[in-house]
Image (cartoon, rainbow, N blue to C red; front, top):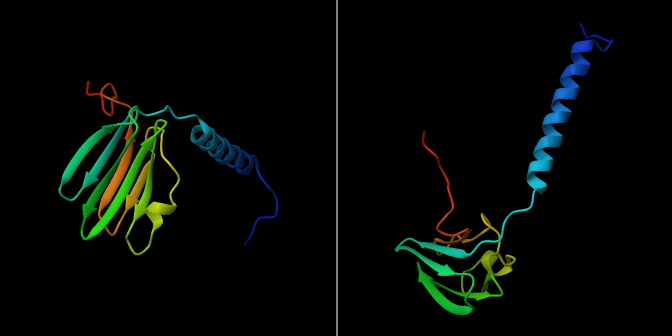
Length: 123
């Protein structure tokens, strides 16, 4: 049947779960560093643009054209003729790991930190 009393092990389990949840929340709230490179990935290949230089350029893929603006260290999709428009509605990205994706075009814009980023250390 069902127990009606809470044992010591129940309290320990509750404490462990709460501690894990709090640590995950804290990790999510840690500030991310500002990026310096915009990686543009398309089905045809990839290219990198500096976020330190203001510019505007167009990308075309799968019959969809996007206009990307880099200004003040952030990138933003200003125009797109894709049917869903999610990439147009996305906020500007400037911190490492932030991303804008246009699924119909197969285009992904990702902020990187620069040449000194370490993704993996073997040893």
